[in-house]
Each structure stands twice: as structure tokens, then as C-alpha cells.
Amino acid sequence: MPRILAQTTAMTFSLATPEHIMTPALEISGLTKRFGDKLAVDAIDLSVPQGSFFGLVGQNGAGKTTTLSMAVGLLRPDDGSARIFGEDVWAAPERAKAMVGVLPDGLAMPERLTGREVLTYLGLLRGLDKEVVARRAEDLLAVLELDGVDKTLVIEYSTGMRKKIGLATALLHAPRLLVLDEPFEAVDPVSAATIKTILRGFVAGGGSIVLSSHVMALVEQLCDRVAVIDKGTVAAAGTLDEVRGANSLEETFVELVGEQDNGLKELSWLSH
Ligand SMILES: Nc1ncnc2c1ncn2[C@@H]1O[C@H](COP(=O)(O)OP(=O)(O)OP(=O)(O)O)[C@@H](O)[C@H]1O
Image 1 (spheres, rainbow, N blue to C red):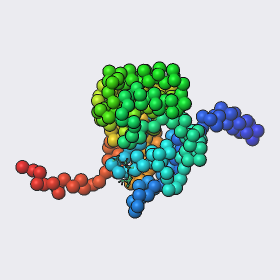
Image 2: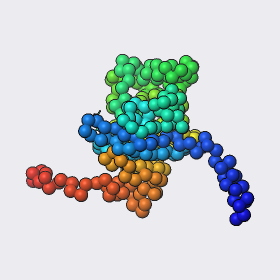
Image 3: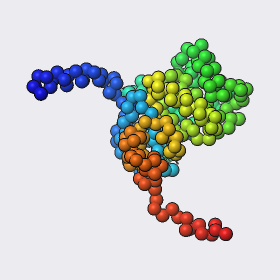
Image 4: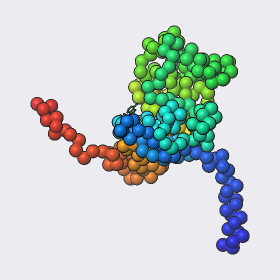
């Protein structure tokens, strides 16, 4: 190709992919966290493109929660950085956090309020207009089937109900990115179906999602990208098809991180 034409082609390409679309929804670089002698997260890099539904999987203690907590500014890393739509979570926390809705592990909330009061309180703290908060709270409580427990305090909620009100608080300010730590844990199948519909709709509407889960089938159903975390590092990452190849995600996962000796012989006393 003549040089001038090659240059024109390259220029056309760069004009067709503006920087704001290229910027990842979440970019994690070298995130590291130690707890005493334990290296929980070891220089993890991850990039979540805009519009993707990203699943983070890993064994118990692999480092998923620690990674996600650092990524959204809930836990200060020992090293590395996290950017939400290009905004550094620690250098520009207000700008970064305005764009993200978070369902953290073990979410602490005001226990002596009803679900509606929690949403109202957090919505006003976010600076949303009072009428907007009231309307969105109404919608979220109805969709998540929490409107029937309007007089119930959060302290009286079941684990699954807590997950749902936590998800509602993450959605309330209509963020561009959702970071959800085990959003389906303890949620009944009917509510899980509703949440899946909400999350798919969120991505279809231009949002981006990162979620962690132990349920491979669920990640396969929902996510278009996946990262396998093992002992604080990324064992594999890419599109779902790149990571699982011709196998199921569960087979790939066990192959990547599973122990050969599962210790069953140590429990021989269980046999009758
Ligand atoms: N606050 C803490 N103090 C000490 N160690 C911690 C702390 N939080 C996490 N860890 C350790 O860091 C490692 C990673 O834990 P993390 O909770 O991130 O794993 P996880 O992948 O989310 O696990 P799970 O799937 O069981 O939720 C584990 O070895 C855990 O024991």
C-alpha cells in the first residue's frame, strides 16, 4: 500500500475509535495487598472494556474480594492502581466513585431503617433529588420484590433480602459501572432470575458489570469475559470462549486451579 494511503487508513481508524470508548470501564494495574505475611493479591492487572459483563472466578481465598475492594476504593492497596473510566480511584475518588455502584462483600448498612429508608438516605447522600430518589426507590423495591416488607427493618432481613437491598443501593444513582461481589449468593431462584434480567438490561443499556461468583454456570450464562484468579494472581483472562476453549468453564477452572489430591482418602472414617 502506498505510504500516504496507509497513513490515511490509520487516521480513519483512530478517528472511528474515540478515546472515550477505548477507555476501559475498569482498569487495574499491579494491584497488590498483603495481610501480614500473606500475599493476598500479587500485582494483578485486569482490564474491563466498556459494555462488557465481566466475571471474576476463583477458589475460596483466591483474592477476589480483596481485588474488588481495592478496585472500588474500599481497601487501600499496598501497590498498584485502579481506574474507573480513566479516573484514579485513590487520586480522584469523588469522580471515580460517582460512576460506580458497588455491592461489597458483607455490606454494612444502617440496620434500624427499612429498605425504603436506606435507599432514601443513601440517595440523598449521593446528592440525588428527593423526588428522583423516591421514584427510583419505589421502582427498585417493586422489581426486587421488597415492597411487601415495607415496614421491616434491615436488621430483620434475611441474607438474600440483604443482598437485594444491597443491589438496589448499588443501582440507585444509575452508575455506568457495577462491581458486585457474589450478587447471587443466598438469593432464591425467582429473585435470581429477576436480578439476571436487571443486569442484562443494564449491559444492554450501555452499562458495564464486574461480578464475582463461584457458580460457573451462572458466569457462563451472563458474562462475555472472565478472569480466573488463583492464589492472588490471574491464571487466565479473556473472552469466555478464549478462557474455556472447547470445555465448560467449570472444567477449565478445575484444570487451572484444582488440587490433584482432594483429600477424600483422609475421610475414610466416613464410610460405613
Ligand atoms: N482482613 C483480612 N485480614 C487477613 N487476611 C485476610 C483479610 N482479608 C482477606 N484475607 C486473606 O486474603 C486472602 C484472599 O481473601 P479474599 O477474601 O480476597 O478471597 P476470595 O477469593 O474473595 O474468597 P471467597 O471466595 O472465599 O470469598 C485469603 O487468604 C484471606 O484469608
